[in-house]
Length: 165
Image 1 (cartoon, rainbow, N blue to C red):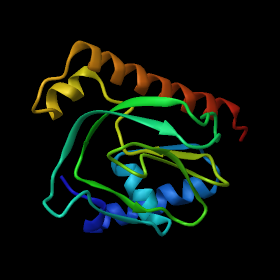
Image 2 (cartoon, rainbow, N blue to C red; image 1 turned 90 degrees about the vertical axis):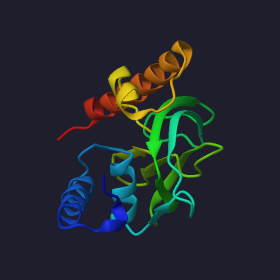
Image 3 (cartoon, helix red, strand yellow; image 1 turned 45 degrees about the vertical axis):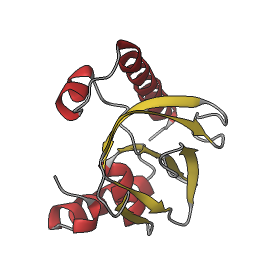
Image 4 (cartoon, rainbow, N blue to C red; image 1 turned 180 degrees about the vertical axis):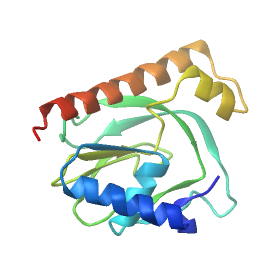
Protein backbone atom coordinates (compact mmCIF):
# COMPACT_ATOMS: atom_id res chain seq x y z
CA UNK A 1 0.00 0.00 0.00
CA UNK A 2 1.89 2.98 -1.31
CA UNK A 3 1.00 5.92 -3.46
CA UNK A 4 2.65 8.03 -6.12
CA UNK A 5 3.21 10.87 -3.65
CA UNK A 6 5.60 8.65 -1.65
CA UNK A 7 8.24 8.93 -4.43
CA UNK A 8 9.84 5.67 -3.31
CA UNK A 9 12.93 4.54 -5.20
CA UNK A 10 11.10 1.73 -6.98
CA UNK A 11 8.33 4.15 -7.99
CA UNK A 12 10.78 6.64 -9.49
CA UNK A 13 12.57 3.85 -11.39
CA UNK A 14 9.28 2.42 -12.65
CA UNK A 15 8.08 5.85 -13.75
CA UNK A 16 11.30 6.42 -15.71
CA UNK A 17 11.01 3.05 -17.47
CA UNK A 18 7.35 3.54 -18.32
CA UNK A 19 7.87 7.12 -19.50
CA UNK A 20 10.69 5.92 -21.76
CA UNK A 21 8.46 3.17 -23.20
CA UNK A 22 5.66 5.67 -23.86
CA UNK A 23 8.05 8.09 -25.57
CA UNK A 24 9.25 5.22 -27.79
CA UNK A 25 5.58 4.89 -28.77
CA UNK A 26 5.15 1.46 -27.22
CA UNK A 27 1.45 1.14 -26.36
CA UNK A 28 0.95 1.44 -22.61
CA UNK A 29 -2.22 1.11 -20.56
CA UNK A 30 -2.09 2.80 -17.14
CA UNK A 31 -4.45 1.41 -14.52
CA UNK A 32 -5.13 3.14 -11.18
CA UNK A 33 -1.60 3.48 -9.75
CA UNK A 34 -0.18 3.47 -13.31
CA UNK A 35 -2.66 6.20 -14.29
CA UNK A 36 -1.46 8.31 -11.38
CA UNK A 37 2.23 7.41 -11.80
CA UNK A 38 2.38 8.52 -15.43
CA UNK A 39 0.38 11.69 -14.81
CA UNK A 40 2.93 12.56 -12.11
CA UNK A 41 5.94 11.52 -14.22
CA UNK A 42 4.86 13.77 -17.09
CA UNK A 43 4.31 16.79 -14.81
CA UNK A 44 0.75 16.44 -13.52
CA UNK A 45 -0.32 16.44 -9.90
CA UNK A 46 -1.71 13.57 -7.80
CA UNK A 47 -3.18 13.93 -4.31
CA UNK A 48 -5.71 12.48 -1.89
CA UNK A 49 -9.30 12.44 -3.09
CA UNK A 50 -10.19 14.39 0.05
CA UNK A 51 -8.46 15.65 3.18
CA UNK A 52 -10.34 13.10 5.31
CA UNK A 53 -8.55 10.31 3.38
CA UNK A 54 -11.70 8.56 2.20
CA UNK A 55 -11.28 5.52 0.00
CA UNK A 56 -13.68 4.98 -2.84
CA UNK A 57 -14.69 1.46 -3.77
CA UNK A 58 -17.39 -0.12 -5.86
CA UNK A 59 -18.29 0.60 -9.45
CA UNK A 60 -18.36 3.89 -11.31
CA UNK A 61 -19.65 4.92 -14.71
CA UNK A 62 -17.81 7.54 -16.71
CA UNK A 63 -18.11 9.21 -20.07
CA UNK A 64 -15.54 9.61 -22.83
CA UNK A 65 -15.02 13.29 -23.71
CA UNK A 66 -13.20 13.09 -27.03
CA UNK A 67 -12.42 10.72 -29.90
CA UNK A 68 -8.92 9.33 -29.35
CA UNK A 69 -7.11 5.97 -29.72
CA UNK A 70 -10.30 4.04 -30.49
CA UNK A 71 -12.45 5.68 -27.83
CA UNK A 72 -15.46 7.69 -29.00
CA UNK A 73 -16.88 10.87 -27.48
CA UNK A 74 -20.08 10.16 -25.57
CA UNK A 75 -19.43 6.46 -24.97
CA UNK A 76 -19.78 5.34 -21.36
CA UNK A 77 -17.92 2.65 -19.44
CA UNK A 78 -18.32 1.16 -16.00
CA UNK A 79 -15.26 0.10 -14.02
CA UNK A 80 -14.52 -1.19 -10.58
CA UNK A 81 -12.82 1.36 -8.34
CA UNK A 82 -10.71 1.13 -5.22
CA UNK A 83 -8.53 4.14 -4.47
CA UNK A 84 -7.95 7.10 -2.17
CA UNK A 85 -5.67 9.15 -4.46
CA UNK A 86 -6.46 10.66 -7.85
CA UNK A 87 -5.01 12.90 -10.56
CA UNK A 88 -5.75 16.52 -9.69
CA UNK A 89 -3.99 18.24 -12.63
CA UNK A 90 -3.10 16.67 -15.96
CA UNK A 91 0.27 17.13 -17.64
CA UNK A 92 0.89 19.21 -20.72
CA UNK A 93 0.35 17.14 -23.88
CA UNK A 94 -2.18 14.89 -22.16
CA UNK A 95 -5.82 14.65 -23.23
CA UNK A 96 -8.66 14.59 -20.74
CA UNK A 97 -10.21 11.43 -22.16
CA UNK A 98 -12.95 10.62 -19.64
CA UNK A 99 -14.75 11.92 -16.56
CA UNK A 100 -17.28 10.85 -13.94
CA UNK A 101 -19.30 12.58 -11.26
CA UNK A 102 -16.81 11.39 -8.62
CA UNK A 103 -13.49 11.75 -10.47
CA UNK A 104 -12.72 14.57 -12.89
CA UNK A 105 -9.75 12.84 -14.57
CA UNK A 106 -11.17 9.34 -14.87
CA UNK A 107 -9.34 8.62 -18.14
CA UNK A 108 -6.31 10.24 -19.76
CA UNK A 109 -4.35 9.80 -22.96
CA UNK A 110 -1.18 11.28 -24.36
CA UNK A 111 -1.77 13.58 -27.30
CA UNK A 112 1.13 12.17 -29.38
CA UNK A 113 1.88 8.68 -28.04
CA UNK A 114 -0.03 5.41 -27.70
CA UNK A 115 -0.81 5.87 -24.03
CA UNK A 116 -4.20 5.64 -22.32
CA UNK A 117 -4.98 5.33 -18.64
CA UNK A 118 -7.89 4.89 -16.28
CA UNK A 119 -8.38 5.63 -12.60
CA UNK A 120 -10.55 2.54 -12.28
CA UNK A 121 -9.71 -1.12 -12.70
CA UNK A 122 -10.67 -2.48 -16.13
CA UNK A 123 -8.48 -5.52 -15.44
CA UNK A 124 -10.47 -6.46 -12.34
CA UNK A 125 -12.14 -9.82 -11.92
CA UNK A 126 -14.75 -11.06 -9.48
CA UNK A 127 -11.83 -12.11 -7.27
CA UNK A 128 -10.63 -8.47 -7.19
CA UNK A 129 -14.11 -7.43 -6.06
CA UNK A 130 -14.17 -10.05 -3.30
CA UNK A 131 -10.70 -9.06 -2.06
CA UNK A 132 -11.00 -5.24 -2.24
CA UNK A 133 -14.62 -4.36 -1.52
CA UNK A 134 -16.00 -4.20 2.01
CA UNK A 135 -19.58 -3.84 0.82
CA UNK A 136 -21.14 -6.40 -1.52
CA UNK A 137 -22.28 -5.41 -5.00
CA UNK A 138 -25.18 -6.84 -6.97
CA UNK A 139 -24.81 -9.39 -9.74
CA UNK A 140 -25.90 -6.66 -12.17
CA UNK A 141 -23.14 -4.32 -10.93
CA UNK A 142 -20.58 -7.12 -11.16
CA UNK A 143 -21.59 -7.84 -14.76
CA UNK A 144 -21.51 -4.14 -15.65
CA UNK A 145 -18.00 -3.70 -14.20
CA UNK A 146 -16.69 -6.84 -15.90
CA UNK A 147 -18.24 -5.86 -19.26
CA UNK A 148 -16.87 -2.30 -19.05
CA UNK A 149 -13.40 -3.55 -18.19
CA UNK A 150 -13.47 -6.13 -20.97
CA UNK A 151 -14.39 -3.43 -23.48
CA UNK A 152 -11.48 -1.19 -22.41
CA UNK A 153 -8.95 -4.03 -22.45
CA UNK A 154 -10.23 -5.07 -25.91
CA UNK A 155 -9.77 -1.51 -27.22
CA UNK A 156 -6.22 -1.48 -25.86
CA UNK A 157 -5.47 -4.83 -27.54
CA UNK A 158 -6.81 -3.40 -30.80
CA UNK A 159 -4.45 -0.43 -30.37
CA UNK A 160 -1.49 -2.77 -29.82
CA UNK A 161 -2.40 -4.71 -32.98
CA UNK A 162 -2.49 -1.48 -35.02
CA UNK A 163 0.97 -0.30 -33.97
CA UNK A 164 3.80 -1.41 -36.21
CA UNK A 165 7.27 -1.74 -34.76
